[in-house]
Structure formats: C-alpha cells, structure tokens
Image (cartoon, rainbow, N blue to C red):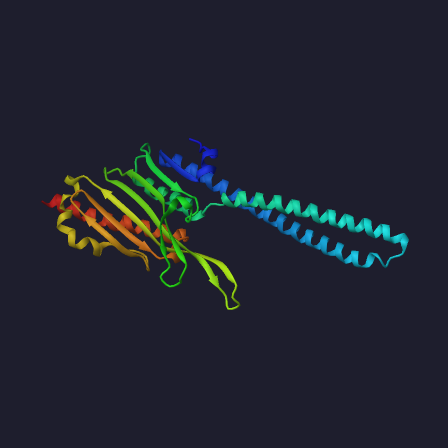
Length: 307
C-alpha cells in the first residue's frame, strides 16, 4: 500500500490502518524521502553560501576598481570599465542564484523530518509484531510537522518574569498506535509533547528595542492503555495496590498517572526534554512500560487460575 506522497508532503502526517509489515514498508519509504530531503537541503544550502560569497566578492572588487579606473591610461580605462560592468553583472547573477537556492533549501528543510519519530514508530511496531496476528490490522497516526506549528497552539499566557512578553504553549500529539495482541488484549500507545515559545520586545542598555523569541521543550508524556478480557485477568483487582511498584522505567522517567480497573490499565509516564530526541531512550521507555504492565497481567492471570 504505497503512501500518497503528494498528500504526505502537504500535511506531513501519516495515518493508516494496515498490517504491521505494510506499515513498516511505508515508514522505510518515509525514511528514504527524509534522507533525500536532507541531502537536497545541504546541497542548496552550500550553493546559496557560495553564491553569497561570490556576489559580495564581485561587488566589492568592482567598487575597488571604480576607485582606481580613473588613474589608468586612456587605453586601459575602457577595459577597466568593462571589467567593472562584468563584475557587477556577476554579482547580480550570484545574488539571483543565491535567492533561488535559498528558496529551494527552505522547501527541502520543511521536508527534513524528525528522524526519531518515524524510527521509533518502526522499532516499536517490529517489537510488537511478535505478539500480534500477522494478518491483523494496526492503526498508526504519526505527525511529522514542527512541534510549534500554529495548529498545535493551545494557549497564550503572559510571561511571569518579563514584562510585555508572552508565551505560546503548543501541544503536539505526534503518535497514536492502536492494535490487539494474540491474547485479545487491546493496546493504545500515545505521545504528547509540550513546547513553548516566549516572545516580545526588549530594550537594550543603549535604548534600542529588539524583538526577542525563544523556544524550548517542556516535557513529553507517553501513555499506554491496555484493555483486556476480565475473565482472563479478573484477579488484577487484588493487585491494585502493587501495580505502581511493578512499573520499572529508565532513569529520569517518572510515572505521572496510573489507573487500574477490572477491564483496563492506563499508565502515563513523563520524560524530560533532554530525552525527547533520543530514539533509543524513547524505545526503551515504551518497551519497559509494556513489560511492566504485562508482568502484572501475568501475575493476575495466575491468581485467576488459582481461584
């Protein structure tokens, strides 16, 4: 099932319900597109830089020649004037090419996707594939657009420390993965990233005003929800007080919220900004969330059989 690349380039969102093997193929295609965009961005960025240097050099040299051309002999003045004209022409040509290269670089920069998002999705799916029917469908909604996109703005507040400054807060729900294991337990994995951008006018010591803006990540919530057959894991109610102690997570990752009923477990953990772009840490966290909750479910199953 090939990706609709035209639609994907427009909204940078991959949303599908298909088998894991098909989704993994699509994610590999997205990775190829990303690598090609990175290469083109670097290519046009290098061209733009060279052309800017060429334009400045040509125009500066032309101005230098203008200073000395009047001192040349009559026979060389025409040649000097022609050379100045050619240098200005070269400068204009380099400027036009630099503008073109800059526009092209901007286009490919938009398609330079956050690698950790699609790589994490692929790796988690490959991990889950062992316990999912090969013919069963899994739903994936993956957002690869910038975290501070206007559509992700949830509120604007006054800056608590800087007068006249405001803070835009963005919520980026960039991944939702849903499916069912062989034991009929349904799983839903979601990620929700918070970012903020502070902006406003700042007056310097000299009295000049300058517009300042600063963006930073605030936190990442990963949620795992398991919905299971009550008959199979009904004894989990007995373990209610022990479930939190069974959760083992990587260092610096903390349990934010947990809920246990006779039908489902919901675990939400919070990761610090320093781990946002570490695909291995993200994968390790999600894997440990699954292992921790299934450790509880397996114990609940044993207790249910013993009754």
